Image 1 (cartoon, rainbow, N blue to C red):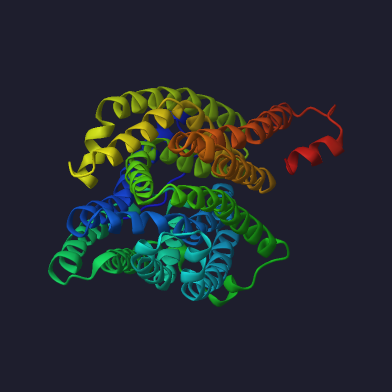
Image 2: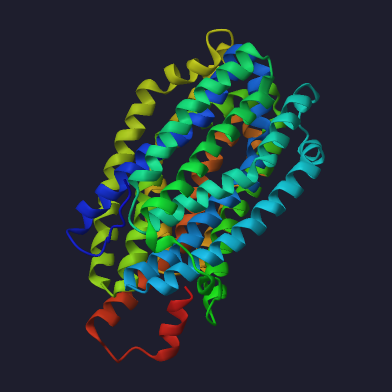
Length: 463
C-alpha cells in the first residue's frame, strides 16, 4: 500500500500539489475530530458544555500542539537524509525521533494531568464551566502518548514522500471517532470527557495501522541495533529541529492562553462564539496549512539532494497558488460562515452566532497574510532553520497576548477577532526577512560564487 517517493524530480508545482492533496484531505479529516466533538457537545449537551471545550482549547493547543510541531520537526532530518540517499542516517534520525517522542509524551501527560485544574483556575475560567473543562483536559492529556505516536509516525512516513497512506488511516479513525462520540455522549451520557475519550480511542487505531504498515511494507524503516547509535551531531540536529518546532507551537499557544483569559472575562457566550468560529476557521485554513506542510518535505528533500533552483521555484509558485486559494476561502467564509456556525449552536443563541460571524469575517479578509506565513515559515523550516520559526512564534505570542490585554477591554469581542490577524502579521515579518536571506544564499550556492564572505554565509545559515 505504501511507497516512498522522492520529491526531487518533476515540475515543482505539480509535485507539491500532488503531495499536498492527501495532506489536505488529512487535515480536513483531522478537523473532523474537533468539529464532531464541538457539534455533538453543543447540540446534545448544551452551549455551556461547548464553552467548556473552548475554555480548555488553548491549554490543549499549548501541550498537544507541541507534539504536532515536534513531530514535524523530527521529520525534517529524516526527509533531508532520504533526499540525499543516505539511508543509514535516515534510520538513525528515525530512532532518535522515537526516543525524543517518548520523552515529550511522558512530560506532557504528567504536566497536563497534574496541573489541568490549576491552569484553568489561573485563566479565570467561569465556575459553571470548570468541571467539564477539567474533565476534557485530563482525558486529552492522558491520551498524549497516543497523539504523539501518531503525529510522529505520520511525519516519518510523509518525510519519505508518502502522504497518502497516513490519510487513509486518518479517515478510518475519523469515522470511528464520529461513531464513538455519538455513543459515548448520546447513549452513555459521558459528557465532554466522553468526547475526548472517543478521540483518543479512534486515534489509537491510526497508531496501530502506522506500525503495521512500517513492519510489513516499509523495510527501509526497520531499525537494527546499529541504528540506535547516533553519530556525532545527529542527536543535536534532531533535537534542535524537533524541539524548536514544538516550542514554536507552544509559544503561539501561550499567546492564545492570554487571549483566552480575556475572552473568559467576556462571559460564556463569548467563549462559545470563539469556540464555534475557531472550528470553522480551522477547516477553512486547512488548505493553506497543507501546502505549508508539503513544502517542508519538498524543501528538505531538495536541500538534501542539492537541487537549489527547485526550492526557489517551488516556493514562489506555491506562494502565488496559496494567495488565490486564500481569496477563494475568504469569499466562501463571507457567504457560508454563519450557516456553518449554526451547526454547532442552532437557533437558540442568536447573539453567539452574531459574534462568531464577526470573528470569521475579520479573519477571512486577511487570509492572504496567513497564506504567506504558512509558505515562508515552512520553507525556512525545511531549509534547516530553527531560530527564525521560534522567533516567529514569539512574535505571535506578543501580538496575540497584546490583543488580549490591550484591545479586548476597550473593543470587546472585536479585540478578540483581530488578535489572530495581528499575530500573523507579527510572525510574517521575521519569516519573510529570513526567506529572502536564504534565497540569496541559495542563488549564491547554485552559481558557485565566491564573493560572499564566509561570516555572512554563516549568519545566513542560522537565519
